[in-house]
Structure formats: C-alpha cells, structure tokens
Image (tube, rainbow, N blue to C red; front, side, top):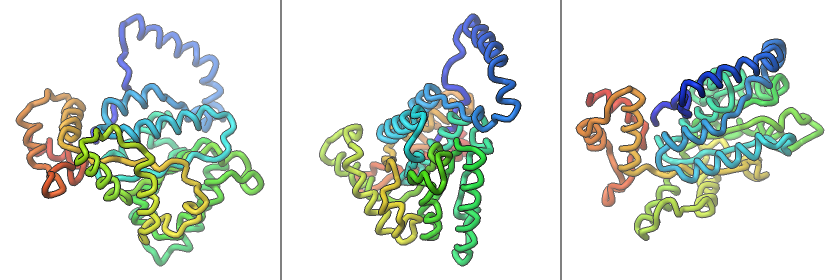
Amino acid sequence: MAAASLGCRPWGSLLGLLGLVSAAAAAWDLTSLHCHFGAFCECDFQPDFEGLECDLAQHLAGQHLAKALVVKALKAFVQDPAPTKPLVLSLHGWTGTGKSYISSLLAHYLFRGGLHSPHVHHFSPVIHFPHASHLERYKKELKSWVQGNLTACSRSLFLFDEMDKLAPGLMEVLRPFLGSSWVVFGTNYRKAIFIFISNTGGEQINQVVLEAWHSRRDREEIRLQELELVISQAVLDNPHHGFWRSGIMEEHLLDVLVPFLPLQRHHVRHCVLNELAQLGLEPREEVIQAVLDSTTFFPEKEQLFSSNGCKTVASRIAFFL
C-alpha cells in the first residue's frame, strides 16, 4: 500500500494556520509541563480519528469492511472511560490487501510517536520467535514483556504480525491479558489494544468475493456476517496458526474479525496513483499501465484479483519510471 501521509487535513488559509499556532501556544501552558514532567504515557496517546478516517479514505483501496469495522471499534473503545476488557482485533486476508498498512496507520494516529512510540510493541515470528524449540522461553519472555509494559502504561498497542507462522501455544500466555479479570491484573490492562495479523482466511474471503462477482453483486454489499464463520473455521483448521486449539478462540476473546477483500485491477490502479503522488510525480498513463500489465491476476479463468495485492506496487513503479 502507499505510504501514509503525515497529515491528511489541509493547512487551509494563513489565518487558519495562525489560529493553529495560537491554539498550540495556549495549550502549551496547560499541558506541556504536565506531559514533560512524568505523564508521558498519557500524553503520548493522542487519538486523531479525523486524520485516521481521512487517510483510510484516501489510501486504503477496496476495503469497505475493514475501514468501517476498525474505526467503529476504535472509537467505541477509546471513548469509553472504563472499558470492560482490552480491544482485540484480528485482521485476515490475502497478501498485499492492507493489513499491515492499516496497523501502521493506527499506531500513527493513536500515538504521537507512531510506530516509534515506546508504547507501541510490534512482534514478528521471524525476528522475535524464530525457533520452535525455544517455545517455553518465548512464553516467559512474552508474558513478562506484556505485563511489564502494561504496568508501566495502560495505553499500549501490541501488534502481532504473521500469526500463521507462530508456534501454536505461544499466544496462550496472553489469555489473562485479553479478558476482563479484575482480580489478577486489575483495570490497567483493560485500556490496551491488541492486533493480530494473518493471511489465514484469505482463500475463503476470496471465494466469497468471487461468488459475489459471479452473482453480479457489488463487493460493497458483502457483509461481515458472510465472512466471520469461514474465517474462524480457517483459523481453527490451520495447525500453523498461533490461535490453533487456543483458549483465546474458545473463550471468544477476539472482539472483531476484520476481513480484507482481494484487490481488483482498479484497486491496484488506485494504489499506483497514490504511490506516484507520494513520490511527487504526475500520473503517467504509460507507467500506470506498465505496472498493471506486470501484475499477475487470478483465478486463471476470471483474472480478477491481484496475486499480491498492492504489495509490490512501489518497486514496480521504480522499475518503470
């Protein structure tokens, strides 16, 4: 996907800009000293839903369900002064459809430091849990890391990438953190956000979208209810998924399963235009067409969906410029 812009809202007029400066100066007196001396956790968490929704509308192609579900869940959770449990999202879909992209946007628009915030924790199986033989050590380290960081800052974001490459059993140490226990962990843990990302369920989602296309249904008519069951079953049937035979699934601790639909040719074109804009380049039709012509589409008969979504758009543009 194209990189996120650092600010989706236009600056507007000079008077508007001066107003922003004046407001910022006034706010400094009230909050800057407070944030500078000892309340960094609270002050680092600065949700900007207007910016998030704007960026999603401009840059996330073909994902009406993901946009609506993520924004709705986040708003309800953040605006609740006393949530009953942490927010737990599980993102599913084909490669290159925007799962990692939307996760980076959430970090960017929830925390002042974005992905570099000390309260955003990103885990990759290849980097952090590469050896299945070290499972017990990973369990202890992961539990200690999550518990320690949540004790230090209740407003923390934990991202777990490539869940379909995690050793089953590791995620079980997170079960106490994902529920609504008062006794063991207290209220601090209830303000955390956990996001799990995987390709599992992608084939099943693709099939639902393909059937809708054959039935001449608009893809925007597809609803979450049509996809939840097939995604859940795909996770339960995948012995390589981190939630396989997991109490997290059995206890229904995932708040929202977020499906990402496969991208069609016009969605890839949208990604190309976004990437060219990010590079400060005018949209050249020969470059756009070259990227589309070099992209593989499936199934073989329909040639409908991009085999890698928008994942390789940036590198292909660089090749054809």
